[in-house]
Length: 284
Figure 1 (cartoon, one colour):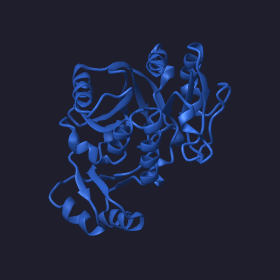
Figure 2 (figure 1 turned 135 degrees about the horizontal axis):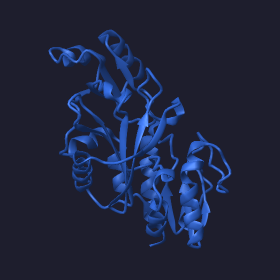
Figure 3 (figure 1 turned 180 degrees about the vertical axis):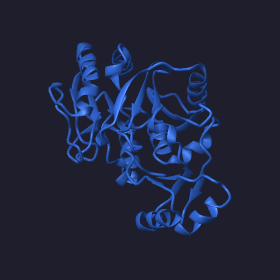
Figure 4 (figure 1 turned 45 degrees about the vertical axis):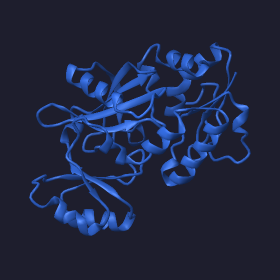
């Protein structure tokens, strides 16, 4: 069986020997080992490499395609082409849906109050009367916190939207990210296999290890479990893997901020057996 773990040229395709010290190498090492233990030959091509024959693989599993948000239309077209010639995980229709954050509108679960911004001139009217104090902007197509902004001055937000262009989510800033952290549940084959807590460096809000953040295993509360289950039920079709991300509000209630179905870190190092479960799904 031939398996491709699709990556990107931005970060390079990682060494499948498992000897690298980059975060994505450490995270996916258990998956590579589990696939090999099941007789798979594992390759790590870049998704936009024109020389790759995707039909030669039995399964293509999207992993470190961490530049897709700069080429979203091309990436979705690539997923459609690959899905037409081999087994793509997750499926191409899910990739198209999940690469624009308007998918959040389709999820009937508790979320931070959100205003959808298309132009800089919409920022002040959106903030008026909401009393948020500190607010947050996030591009509707984005990854790894790129293009996000925490602000308490509307003029700064207007300049940000004007400079970057595109559409944004405008939300209240949930300061609990600094001490409670962002929490995530990893779901493999419809089952929650493990959960993690991600903490930014003091004073920051970005929870990716690119910015020095740390992570640790976590246990779900009943309210968090309900949020995760309701989120998963709302996905349009079955998926092999998912990561559900949330923050807590000032009352301690979980509020969904992302449903990651494309290329999330799955924190296999915190979930014994999770990589093996995904390898079994890939093997079929």
